[in-house]
Amino acid sequence: MSQRRVRSRRPRELARRPAALLCGALALACAPADRGARGSGSAGGITQAEAGGFGDEGATEVGDDGSAPGSDGASDSGAPAEGGPSGGGGVFDVGGGEGGDTGPVVNDDECQKIDFLFVIDNSGSMANEQAALVNSFPGFIAAIGATVNAQNYQLMVIDTDEASTGLCTELCGTFPTCFGTACNTIPEPTACDMTLGGGVIKNAKGVPCDVDGDARYLTEDQTDLAETFACMGKVGIGGQDIERPMEAMLEAVGAQAQAGACNAGFVRDDAILVVTFITDEEDDGDSFGDPTAWRDALVQAKGGNEAAIVVLGLVGDSDVPGGGCGPLGLAEPSPRLRAFAESFGFGSWGSICSPDYAPFFDDAVAVIDSACEIFDPEG
Image 1: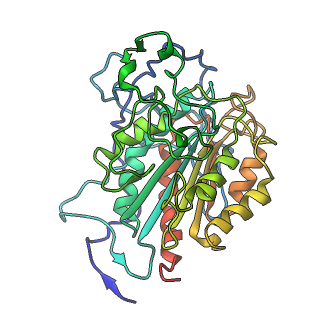
Image 2 (image 1 turned 180 degrees about the vertical axis):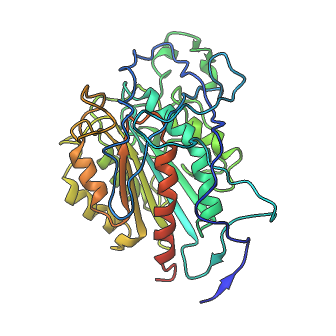
């Protein structure tokens, strides 16, 4: 096995430190009232197809400026949910220790590249969930860099409809500003902005997120990667009530990934594909097909290589005993979406009602690492 040492591999069981999460309030005046607390605090109902289950812990919201109400931009993580795992949560400690620089040994016969696709529901009930996802991202991507062999990434965000053209598109037809943003700084939406599965490169108001280059996705060299992902990941709550996460996913890696299309160059033959979808509604007929058809189409998009795909889902689980969404049904039960995730050898799902997604993504790092280890880039 050929090998080139880049940095010494640190143990895969990463040390944790108390969260110093980016936090704040979603400062959109038109945001609907919350559905209430996200979940019962239970750690149950989180399943992984190959490895162990995931747990739940506390979280905070993130605002456009990355700060919490009444804070200077930093906060400690909440206490573990009642009945959930003990120990610290939040972002992962991936800093160097006494041994100097840390990271994985990069092996030529493991994966060298990862394409990350985030499918994010942009309907009216998703403000808190988008904030929780953005909170978890810095620790997740840092842990990937410190643990997984691949050091070359592409990251794309899509939403779940094709009608969202930016919160301010209509308002700017009447008013000179939109929630404090001058309308003359907001460009007209493009065809790809309005295409199902097209990569999101603007915030919820339609203001560009300063993506480096011309592609509709980020790379590991993106300037202010976490901040740019936060801009894209808070896709807003102005989307259609009919969510099509699976159809959007398949469009993103299928028709829209072809040469000349919106996401050209995103799906690479020599990379593993990591799909994360987050929605509080079941995909029960809005997207074409069923879990088996979705699986088959996604595998086809990766040239028939299921082992090159990792699927992560944050969905409703109030129909699962002990599920994080509890008996109040804070998110719609999603057995079809859970079945889709479970159909993959490297497939996992967690409760969208968990107040903190960091533990879910913590365990996901090990799943991605396992997929990377068996992937043959020359395959």
